[in-house]
Image (spheres, chains in turn blue, red):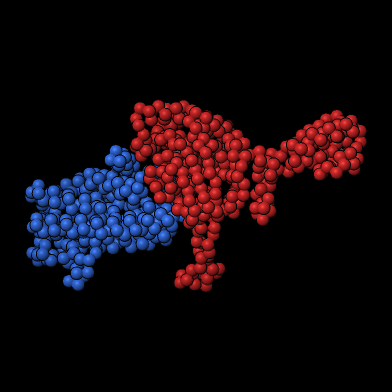
Length: 264
Length: 336
C-alpha cells in the first residue's frame, strides 16, 4: 500500500508541475496577501507595543507563517470529489481496490508537499529578507511546529472530505464549498488571530475545529507560548482528528448506499 | 462464478413541478417517484463463459453492471461473484475483475497509457517480472505499441479504447466487464478487439460479460445472451434459441419456371401453418415459423409439384430479432 501511496504522491507532484502558470500566479497572490496584511497590521499597531498578547514583530511573523502554513494544508479535494460525483468519474474510482477517501487524502498530501517546497519555503526566505522575521530558535520548536502543521493538514483535509462527501447527497454544493472556504479562512485565525476575537466568540470557537487548522501551528511557530502549552495544542489537534473521523465514516457509508452514477 | 438472485435496484427520482410556482413549491416540499431500474433479476454464469446483456436504452443494463462491479449497492437480492459479495467486500472483490466503460475513460488524460499502466500495476500490486511479461503480451496482442507512450488526449477513439482494454486487464482478472466497448468504433478496430477478446477467453479462460447495442458483437463473441426489458430479464439462453423465439422464422423464396399464383402454392401445401406471399408472377415467398420440422416438408412438397428454377433460404438476422424484441410490447414479451 505504501508503494501505491508514494506513486500517487509522485503523480500529483508531476501534474502540479505541469500547471506552471497556476504555480507562478499562486506565488504572486500569496506575496500580495502577506504584504497587505503586513502593512495593515503595521497601521493598526501604530504606537502600541503590544496588542492581544502579541508584539508587532510577533504579529508580522504570525501573518507570514499563517499564510505559509496555509500553503501546506490548503487543497481542493472537496472540489475534486464534487467533480468526480457530478461527472460520474466516481464509478472508475469505485472499481479500484483502494479506499477512495484515503487516496484523495494522499493526493492532497502530494499537493501539500509540492506547495511547501516550491511555494512556502522560497516565499518565507524572501519575506525574511524584507521584513523583520524570526525563525523558531530551537530544533525542538521546529519539530513542534512541523508536528502541528501535519495535524493541521489532516484536520483541514477531513473538513474538505466532509464537504466533498455532501455532493453525494446534494449533487450541487458549490455554495457550501465556497462558504466552507471563507469560514475556514476566518475562523482558523488566518485573517485575524483568535486572541483578537471578542471573548464570547473565542469561547464559541473553542468548540469548533477551525483554529486547530491555522492558529495553533502559527502560535507554536512564533514562540509566543511555552512548549508545554504547545504540546497541549497538539493534543487538542489529535483529538479533533479523531472526532472528525466519526462523521466522515458515517457519511461515507451512507454515500456508498445512495450513490447514483450520473450519465449512463 | 457469478450468482445473482432476485436482484433489485430502485431509485428515488425527484419529480419537479411544472412552472415557476412549481419550482417555488419544490423549494419547500419535494415529491419523489420510485423507479425500479432492475427488478427481480436471477441468473448464474460459469467460469469461461462469454455472454452479452442486451436491451434498449434504460432497460437496466448499466445499473446491473454497476451492481455486479460493486459500484452500486442493490436495494434487495443477493450477488455472489468469485466468492465475494461485491458491494460488501468491494476492495478485495475488485482485484479479481476488470471493467471497461465505453463512455468513460479510466486512463489519466494528461499522461501516456504507459504511465497509467505503471500506476495501475502499483494499485493492483502486480508482480514485477510476470506482470511485465503479461503487459508486453497485452500491448503486442492489442497492437498498441506504436502509440502507447503518447498522451491519452492525443489518441483516436479506437486507439484509446484498445488502451482502455489493456488497462482493465493489467492485473489479469478472471472476470471482465465490458460496458458498450465498441460504441463509435470503426469496423477494423471492432474486429481487432473481438479477435483479442476471443483469444483471451480461449487462452486464459477469462469470463467476459458485455453489454452492447451492436448485434455483430454478440454474433462474433457470445453463445449466451441475456435480454433485459424495463428492468426485468425476459430471455436467458443460447443465441440460437433467441432466434427461434423472436425471429420471424425462416423465409423460403422460390423462383418458378412458369407463372404461379399464391393460391396454387397454398393448395399444394395444404394446411401447413405457413404464409405464402406473391412477389411477382414467377416468384413467391413462403414464411415458415418452425424451421426444423417444416422446412424439409415445404421444400420437398414445392419441388415435387412445380418446376422450380431457384430456391433461396433467408434466415432472420440477429439484428431483426433485436429489433423485434425492442419494439415488442413488454406484456407480450414477458409472456412470450
